[in-house]
Length: 449
Image (cartoon, rainbow, N blue to C red; front, side, top):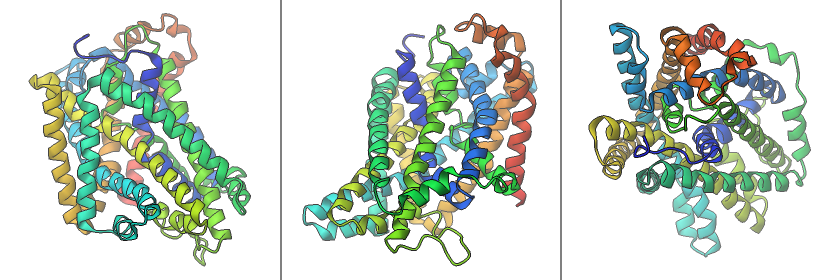
């Protein structure tokens, strides 16, 4: 097991797992959904569902991963109890590997945009306006160039392994990201119009909190914001020492992930209202958010433009924040197929990371060449179709297939008194009944809406 690699500390694991969970979905997706769904009402429902749905599903992945000390394919095979569940585990593991790889293929494209928008104000400051314009204009060569740059960074980190790659860089990037986030919030809250955004975000209209679409949207966001389903958390769980308390670690990752999403809302929503105060349109005549999916590439740059020279520095800080969030997530996605290649086919880690990284980069380039057709399709198939079904399967394995006593013994390894805890009294039933029903509800809404 030592040769395989382990996180050296609780702190290292919490930052690495939180980094995996905290991505563009938290800093981009959550605030956008909150702005579109009643602000504080969405926040309230999201917080409830994150702890009632996302945390139990996260624990299922961590417990299975640590028990197996292996990738998702091997882990689900190990806890299978008959031939049918063995084959289902194999299929679930492979679909997870494919899904994680496809998510990374479109993620690399979006992450490349973040890096472009980070570099653009620096180029403008240096007097290279043509370069700044090229960086912020949608174009094939720009997209392909920054896909490759981002994938090289991701491969370089994964090649270092668990301690010298994932943990080392997570413990550097996550504190930097948090510091940038707090500084940006502090600055934006000093601007005219920001308090309107704070009110919209923190003062709920409770009548909206019972809206079915809002509840389903919040449920989906809670589930996806923790990187659940594709095996990233299962892999990270496999690198946890037997002496660690899994219940505590899972709680800490959930708190950090949700905390960062909530703080991102404290940045984005006030910034939107500051932009509106400065004459930038953010809502249409019907009160709907304009350019919801491209919010940070339209509304926020327009806001930064109104700030003069200060806006250049704020823009660079914001997009380096987004780039860090993207990188901490991308390394966990690449680890899913790399761990399988290393453990099941005895391929050298560095070589596996380079080969698989190149394959994913080529898929990403293909998406860039056929953007109108493939970009939205890849997102829908992976995050809206495959991911909830994979999450459902992991909950079924934890709740129905794996023997309950074996699961208890695994948790007891780092938490001897777990049987008397509130966690053990509630969690097994939650993951067995509530999580599958909730995930199917989200999936049904996406498919049949």
